[in-house]
Image 1 (tube, helix red, strand yellow):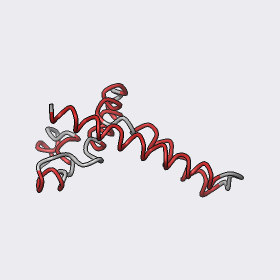
Image 2 (cartoon, helix red, strand yellow):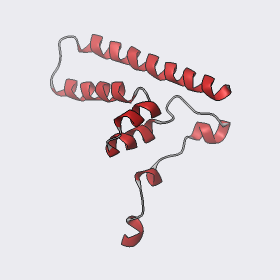
Image 3 (tube, helix red, strand yellow):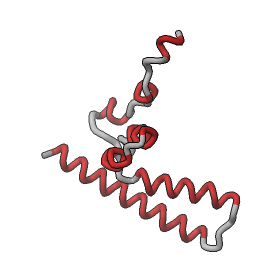
Image 4 (tube, helix red, strand yellow):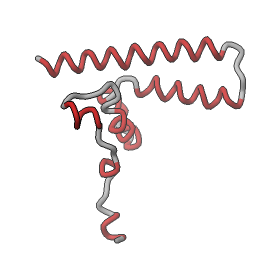
Length: 103
């Protein structure tokens, strides 16, 4: 059993996209697991190419965690701005990716 665990990689534990399996095309979240894997491996450019919103999402999550401990004065406004920014980046990169796959 221990010998088998030596040959496993991070990709062996990734969850497949249900949308891609059922309908045959990517969802707006496709690529985030692989982007996180690239981040853990230290390949920051490949992580961005895989999922462009990875850094803003990590910043957003970090802000939410820090805000739970330290209540910032304009936290609600910052959360709203970061949410809108992430939605635009996720949907924009998704539309670009889908247009490139169609052509």
